[in-house]
Length: 140
Ligand code: NI
Image (cartoon, rainbow, N blue to C red; front, side, top):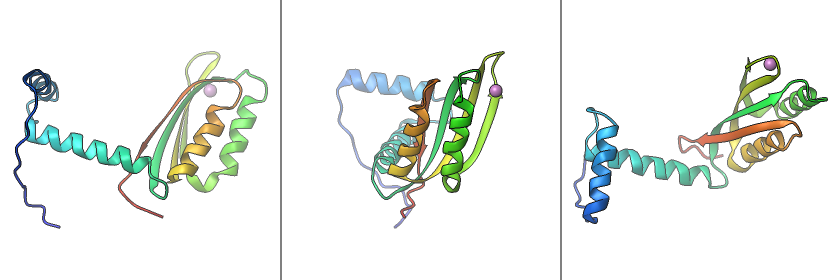
């Protein structure tokens, strides 16, 4: 497929265009309308691919928990060993006397990465957490 840039015209209501131009301005001097449209299209495609079964996705799961919670660290540790093939790395930060922040980097099939994240997020004592996924379009 050619990487030559193709031109097309877009019609949109004026108020939406005004807000779009504000978005372009917020993204800085290096961005113009065309580049922001390209960014948005890529974001939409990646988002869709990340929700498609059979895609290989990378996930970063960020959780916060109190390490004094009974058995919690042990349980989180066991889950990560159960899925060691799909866990690329884990970063642990001691936030204060009680709270730990962990960023778990996952790689695997869309549904599996979500399942592992759900297991960790569903572990009693995990206070907050969020999975962010991305993909380069690789399939299994
Ligand atoms: Ni800690």
